[in-house]
Figure (cartoon, rainbow, N blue to C red):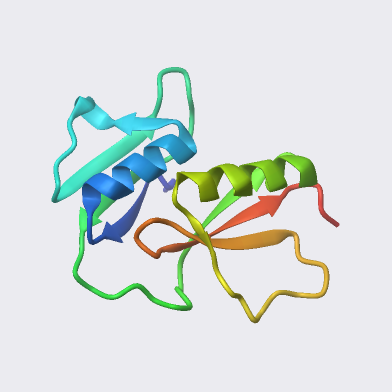
Length: 124
């Protein structure tokens, strides 16, 4: 049976992306090395989750990406706090014209412009 182990994202500035996602997810570079062309982040000691590989890319960021990352917060209060923390780390809110009436998610962009969502796991 197959399983997802690594999520791969492009970045114009791999070091900046490593800094953001490392702090956002409490991940560290695999092997302790950061390469400006390709770096794989893994959960810090004792953590769990898929790897996040960040590769140098010159292709433009998609305004409506076909694939994105969803990050789950335990509840609405944690979602609000995490969105604020991620914005403080360099993420930005994305004007998203497709929000439903009572959304359980907030759309953000990382320091590279890649879209991702922070979801309230208790919503609805």
